[in-house]
Image 1 (cartoon, rainbow, N blue to C red):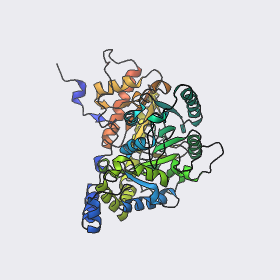
Image 2 (cartoon, helix red, strand yellow; image 1 turned 180 degrees about the horizontal axis):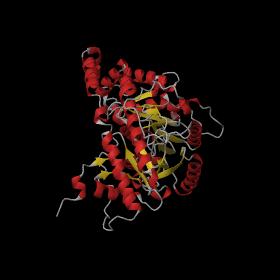
Image 3 (cartoon, rainbow, N blue to C red; image 1 turned 90 degrees about the vertical axis):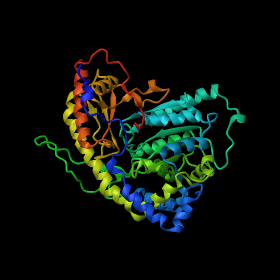
Image 4 (cartoon, helix red, strand yellow; image 1 turned 180 degrees about the vertical axis):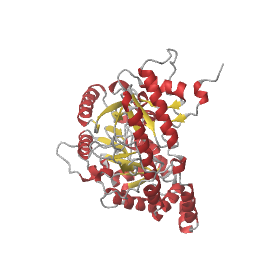
Length: 481
């Protein structure tokens, strides 16, 4: 017998949400580390235990950089250095939630699925609920109704035992937590417009909820090139001009939920916040803008919240995590290396990749009935992030397509079921959606992957799929992101 079909083809992985190896700044990080270690005034404190909120020079540099990008007055007291976005979520849950007080974790659906185990580990297994999206991101009215119904049931059935509640200093326990990626969401790619962001902040205040926003793609946005004319083949420049930094377009730097919470006046119907912890935080990370391996990020929130986060036991025992990496990252930020790489390397490369892949999707998949979003932000010519979210035609199931792609085409893609909220899958189903990543594989391989996917969609649509193809399509989720 001959080899299986997939053994004859190079595997292409459009599930893995990693940056391309060509994006990794090994030389820039090495140079920054050498500069930092050459100065004892930097190297000695950088190799010791760090302060609980993190390296002060990095906090100051981040505050200035974020202020220049988003606007506002820089304030390092709003910054707490973390061990990256995922570790930060775990510490926030440890310090600001308690299953005896925090009623539910509401997760924007479709969701970044690897956040769900973090919520489970914090005691919220069975207490995660979907916050469904519409075309503008989280549907605030629908979420408000779901939260009200949940609160009514909780107050009837779940009296709080004060003896079981965490005793915390410099922190508070929120009644709800809402988790989302408001800009270039993973996986849907959507960006919430400003009115929707303001409505979500007001909802969080009414319900005493903490908005935990993963703002990891905000710096990875670009203006869309005009679509090619129907009479000419798709053509996109190999090296588009760099995006201005900070970008001139307001659509590329919408205020974060934490910015809105800080500036929006309170109304009488909103929960009082005498300690000024706030109801929204920005969870940032260097993983997408430098390298995942540095395992360093930041929280930008009210000074009270950021200080409270720094008092999490895991941080007080030795100080902020990733302290030495923070020294190298501060040097990259201070010297301008980070911004130059974003402006001249990372964003232009992602912009070119997306333009080429989107053109291939339009040419090969859309004629088969596949639907996708052109822009991250409804009504604006902008895109960003790593992913394209596809809706399959009626009668074509994502699981069948993903399974057939793996078995017949050596193509790994993410079926929509992967992004349903753990324990509340029925509230927001994605059985006809797929996510493909254009950042990891070489761009020519991504384009070949789109071609293979078109073959698979056509086969499944026309019923040319063997009945015995019944194994799970998701396979190993290791390193999927």
